[in-house]
Each structure stands twice: as C-alpha cells, then as structure tokens.
Image 1 (cartoon, rainbow, N blue to C red):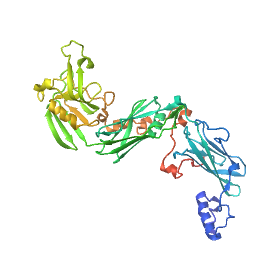
Image 2: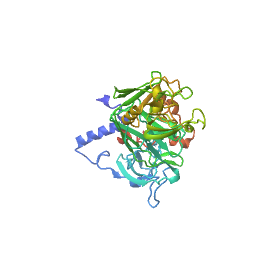
Image 3: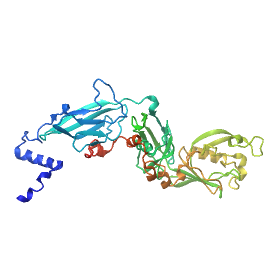
Image 4: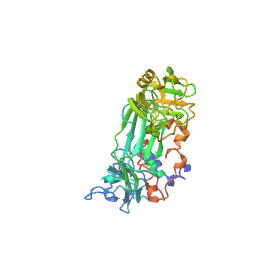
Length: 440
C-alpha cells in the first residue's frame, strides 16, 4: 500500500474536509479531533478596523481590515455583507495574518463581518462583528430620477435616468450603470446608453413586447461613485406597455398607414413639410397629445410679417419632437392632402383623421417618416430618436458593453472605486465576496 503515501504531505483544504468526514465515520464523532466539534470563540484573536464600540459609525471611504492579533492563530475566511445583501470583496494574505477589502463600503449601511480562524493545533474558530457606516452628507449624494412617469406606454418608449451631478469617468459610469437595474416580463435584451454625463436612456434591442410589465430600480444607495460622491436612495419605477402601434408617413405617396400589432387598421392622405421646411426622416416616439394647441411661426424661428408667418388654432395635435413637429388636423390645407407637401414640417390631415389618430395612439407609440427629403431625426436632443441607432451603435454608448469604455482612470483612488458592491448569486454562495484566495 506504499503507493498511497507520496501525496500525504500536500493535503489541500478540500482534502481536509473529505478527511474530516472520514474521521467522523470511523471515530463515531470524536470531538477531540481538530476538525471536529464546535468552533472556538476567536473574538480575542481578531481585530476589525471598523469596530465601533464607543465611536459610532465609521467612514465608508476607508478600506476594511481584519487582522489576526495573536501568533498562535491565522485567519482562514472572511465574509462581509450588509443588511441589503451587498457583499464586500477582499484579499487574504498568504500567511492568514490580514484580510483587506478591495471594493468600497456603502455609506449609511449596517454590516456583519464573519471571520473564521484556525489555531496552531488546527482547531477552527469563529467570531462575528457588526458595524455601521456614516451616511453621506447631502452635498455628496448622487440622486437619480427615472422617467417616464408610472403608467402605460407604447412599445417604443425609452426609459430615462437623470443624475443630479455629472459622471464622466468610465470607471465611475460603470458603477452607476451596473446599479441601474431594468427587469421586464416578458424578458428582453436591453442596454443603457449615456447621452451625456448626467443622462442615460434605456431601450431593448427590439421594441418592447406588447403588454409587458417593466420595473426600473437603483441599487446605488450608499455606493461610492468617486471621492465625496455616494448614491442616494431612489424609488423604483413600474410601467406597462400596450399594443404595438406603428404609423408610417410616406412623404412621396402622401399617405399615412397605421398598424396595430402588425395589422393595418387605417390609411389616409396627408401633407408633410415643403421645401425649406422638410419633415425629418426617421423613427420618432410620440411625446404627448393635446386636443388644442395654438401654433405660431415665431416658435420655429420665422420672423413676424414674413410671407411664411402664421398663427393658427390647431386641434388633435400629437407631438413628435420638442422643436415642434406634430401630427394634427390641418383643414386649411385640405386640398393638398394626398397631393402635395405644403406644411412647415408637421404632418397634416383632415380633422376627422387627426381625431381618429389622436384617439388611437398613446405616448411611446411610433411614427416613422420616409421619403421626406429632410434631415435625419437625431437620436437625442429633439425628442426620442433612440430607435434610429443600430443595436451595435446603441451598445457603444454603454459603459459596461462597449470595450472602448472599459479602461479605468489612472488615479489609484478612483480605481479602488471602480467596482460596486457585489449582489451576485456567486457572492451569496461564498464565491468571491469576502472569500478571495490568499495573495502573496
């Protein structure tokens, strides 16, 4: 049986666990074995840098350290988690004398630290500590406002997140974006896109499913984004989608076709922008509806007294852009509907057709203009032109999904903030939260 002795001096921890099982079976639970019995109280063998007895809450900006205080024992495992299930990753020194966090603590949170030890005889010890981190001052908080308001929308409605302070570094943007969670039933593939340092839009790869339920929430509360900037609490947003309603306005055929869930439900003659005032080409998301609007030429930059000036009462107005493109009733140009493009950029039709359109669409439904000879609808800045970007282009605006946006800052302090607290299932099972393998 000599073949079984060569590896005996290199028993790993996992091997030790298997051996412990064998001892229990053969020794009928002999508690005298180092790996058997209840762990001893290791409270006097461990020091935690965040121990708060008599000192109140601690600074979340400082790393957490756990050290072995005696020569006879070593740390074997550290697990750090707050009351919301957010784990803190860390590194354990090779000799088991020190564990140090590698991801920042959350401000205004209560943590539990579970430390496992081993003494020189191989007996296992255990101690638990708790501590609380200070809340971030009001001026150091990053607020997030979600949009649109709760309600039911068309399948083209993007989600928005507005930040109270700009976030420009890629590493910091990843922290924010990772904490902004979107879930839906049915599930979709989607992504955030940074419009600028303070605004993000979210859309699926394709349009939202019909009758979907969507939830948007932030897990940024207390999370350190950068020095002196921590996420604030944000109420989650819940909304739904209705039917898939799409209208296509063809400036060449001067017809609008409306589909509901893929079936044509109406077609009627229209007029769109004339030369010098061409309607924009591309996909637009309905921004809102007004049964009456007073439209003036000065609102689009036409000087008073010009041959192009106007001041008109307009009914059944469905808004497409912030700059003033609408679908609306235009009885003054009825002779041109289906025959000529004579408007200043809006899509005009009869009063009856405009009323029907108004009553059969909602915010978030889609209107696409083709063959207008106008400029392309921009993705951002004049309403929701988000769907005019390809999925590849959309993902390039994400701090998480675009490889070009993955580089950290050169500032060591900012690099330390580049990873948000871990809420993954792997962390919950001990796979990498406070339990990283020892480092030399």
